Length: 159
Length: 152
Image (cartoon, rainbow over all chains, first blue to last red; front, side, top):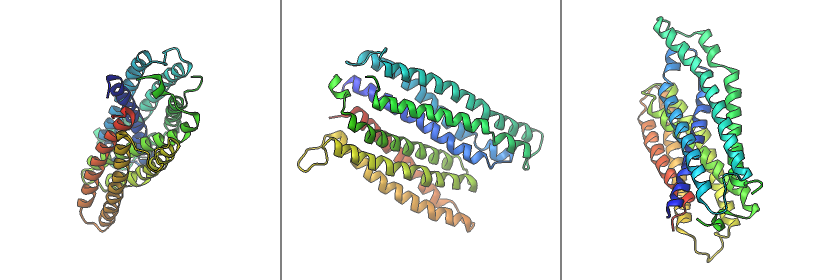
């Protein structure tokens, strides 16, 4: 395997890491919608950290290695329309993902406040925060953008 | 890498898309299942969530990945009799099929584990599912590396 092959393999592995993070958060979104206790919400924190790490590795790896490959490989150029589309979509996915994170952090913060106040039982208020529709819509939007990037990478329109 | 390696006929794109999408869902399901089971610390709700993630996310992902893989391999002409397959494809097929078998075993063991949880018994079998899923996750990272880097 050449150095370029290694970079391509790591670029693809980064993309897998990104999508794995997206999948992980879908599962947590489904799970947290039925969670009304501070303890149940807080117990998700280590899993959230795994998802955040997967998305961070995926986000940084795909963009850095992707740009490097665009400059390095014959037949590709950074100004190719499909590469520019991917860069724009990548930035959009990051922005939407960041907003999704803010939305779901509210539930975790609320759970910690309730626990600190000694309220360990079920809370309707916490459940309402955990069932955020805005969070679901934002994550669905981020997932759709990532799907568009995958389609763009494989079909390479206008190439 | 030359441009020749990067260009493929348009008719290969859709099967490749299904193959990659399935593989991504599979890896995502494994990462989620492993994380949830690992951090469950005996909590029945999280043990069940980890198991159901493997069943409802990883298994459909594996089916889509394997079916898409067979389709794209056939389109590329690798499944014809007498055609020698490259190393990267052999690695991919081996890990996909062996991994599918391990996934199935882990789901059966985990299913019995979830049933035992309902009876108030221990979570030992779900720990076995966790170990198998963790091994699978590692194996599929190698498979992705082989498929993308295509070592000769």
